[in-house]
Length: 110
Length: 113
Image (cartoon, rainbow over all chains, first blue to last red; front, side, top):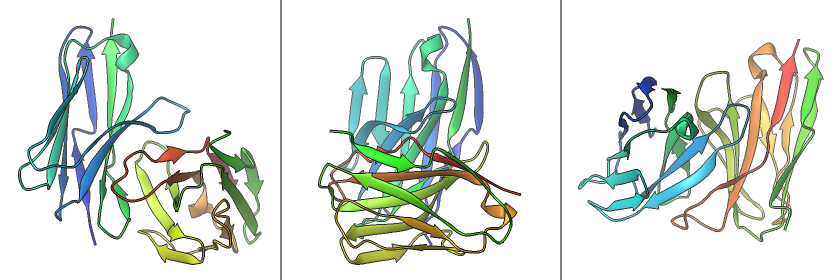
């Protein structure tokens, strides 16, 4: 079945440093979403990427979708303490099934 | 709009007991999902539905059952609870595949002892 791998599992950074998490799918995706989950909370949608090679930005966050639509990345520039949490990618198949990666947990030291 | 609501918030079950986790959405979404999240882990898809009367298995369906008799409701049934089912259960909905955001409920924290 479809598998979505995400690395790294954990990332500890000093405030102001950059952060990147990578997502790789075993199959071609119709689209990919990114979510953020704070401790004790539920996943909250950040963005969706649909087109091959797509790049989207939200303030300090940059999201990319690979040319083959099998990989994606999230990059945060100049992390802040408010960025702490776990970031998940989720890949869709055309059948509507959604597969989440295991997430990258970001901690930021002030 | 309340969005996606889940009940109960917390539950402790004894081994072998059964229960139903409720999930309701008021956004008229066609797609609904049940996930479980073990401590420190990602979300694993249990079952999903693309519309009323249609359900399909996800990655980890064993020990669970679902039904989708209405657009709004997508209950998850646990039969013969086992300690391995101790987890946080999230229900989510969205309008349709390719339409982006899954809206998550607050979750149900279940402990089986």
